[in-house]
Length: 575
Image 1: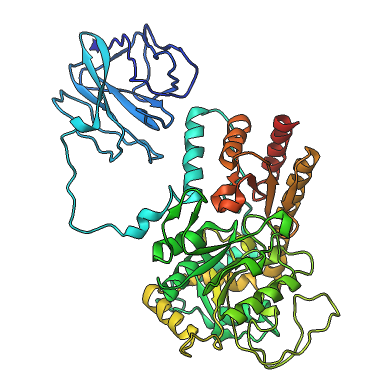
Image 2: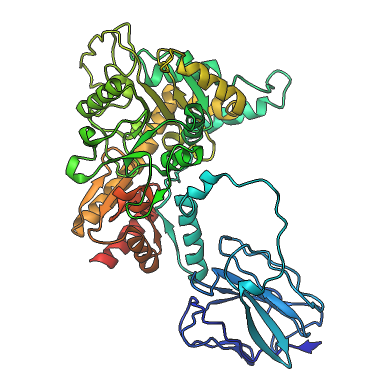
C-alpha cells in the first residue's frame, strides 16, 4: 500500500466553477486552485479513507467541472495513481455523461478522444507532486482517421446546437455546479402528469394481445390503422370535409415536419412565424432551402421571417411578407401562446391562395383553446374544398355552420397526441393532406406524401395507435380534457405571478406557454440569471428566432408543487 500525496496543481488560466482561491482538502493534502480559478470537486471511487491511501494499481478518481472559456473545458475527469505516469484531463465540451478511461499502470503516452480545438491538458505525477501541463493544438500529433465522404454543407449552416438539447446541456452543467439544488424544469414543453388509465389500459391490452396467436400483428399500414384514422376525422374534422383517407397517422408532428420538408425538396422557399418552433427553420436549413446565416440580423437567407409581436397581435403583416411557396404557421403558437382569430386565418388563407402557396398548419395545441379561435385551418373557407354543409364541432353550441362554395385546397395540417394525452414518450400524431391539394403541375400532393411515408416509415406503433383510439373514446376525451385543464391551471398561476411582479405577459389563455417580456435584455442572459439564482429552467425567446429576443418562455408542464415553488422563487428574484 503506497500513499498518494497531492501537493498542488495550477490550471493554465481556466475559468472554473466554485469559490475563488479555495483549497480543497484531500485528507492531509490539498488541491490548490490558482487565483481566479473556480472549481467544484466531486469525489468518486474508491471511498476516501484516513489516512488517504490507495493500492498501487488502483486509481483515485475525482472530477472538476469547468465552464466554457479560452483554455477551459466544460468538465474534466482527473485520475491520480501512485506511479510516475502521464494522465489525461479529458475535455468534454459536448458531453453530459463523463467519459472514463483506465489510468492503472504506467503510461508513457496518451491520446485525446476529443475533437475540441481547446488545448489538451495533462497531469504529470512526479516526486510526490502534481503538475498541470497544457499542450497547444499545434503540438498535437495524433490525427483521427477520416473518410473521403464530404460533410453535408447544409449541416454546417446550422447555428450551435438544436435549442432544447442545448438547454439540457446547460441544465446538466448547472446540476454539476449545484449538486444539492432542486432544479425545476419549466423549459422544454414536456408533459409531466400520468397518462389517464383509460388510455394506458387500452395500450396494455394491445401489448398483451401481441403475445397471443389471435392478437399478434406485425407490420401495419404505413398510413395508420383505419379505425384510428376514422376516429381522428370524426373527432377533430367533422363537417370540415376531411375524410379518413386524408389522414396519415405518424409518430409525431415533429417527425412529420421533416417528412413534409423531404416532400417539398430543396428548391422551395419558405415563410415562418418569427418567433416559432425551431424545427421549421432547422429542417429547412438541413434540406438546403436556405442561404447562409446572417449574423447581423440573426436570420437565414431565403427565408421569409413573418414577425409576430405584441404590437401586431402576434399575427404578421402579410403585406410586408415576400412570396414563399411554403408557409409554416402554428396556432396556438409555440412559443408565444397566441391563437390566431378566424379573421386573421381567413386573411392567411386568402394570402396563400393569391400567391399559390401551401400552408403547413401546426395545430398541436388546439385542444388548449378556450375561446372561439379556430382549432383547425380547415374551418376557414378555402383551406379545403367542402362539398356539403354541416355542424362544426368546435363552434359554440347553437352557432350555425354555413355552407361553403367548393374551393381548391391550400393547406396541410399536422397535429399530435403529445400535449393532449401525455404522449411525448409514447409518440403518436397525424397529418392531414387533402386529396384536393395539388402541385403546380396538377399532381396530388397526397400521393407524393404517401410515397414518402411508405418509403421512410413503417407506420406508428400498433400499441401507440391503440392508445390513440382510446384517447378518442368518450371516456378518453373526458380524461384528456381533465389533464389539459390541470396544465391550464398551472398556466394561470404562472401568468398571475409575473403580472404581480409588473411584467408584460402574453399567451397562457389558449396554450400551455407563458411569454414574458424582459425589455432591453438578452434572452439568454435572463435564462442564465433565472437558472443561476432560482434553479429554474426556462427557455430563452431568441432560441425561437430573432423576434423572440427579449422574451423568455415559461412552460406550464409541471407538477403543481413545482409550479408553486418556481413561482415563489420568481417572486423572490424579481420582487
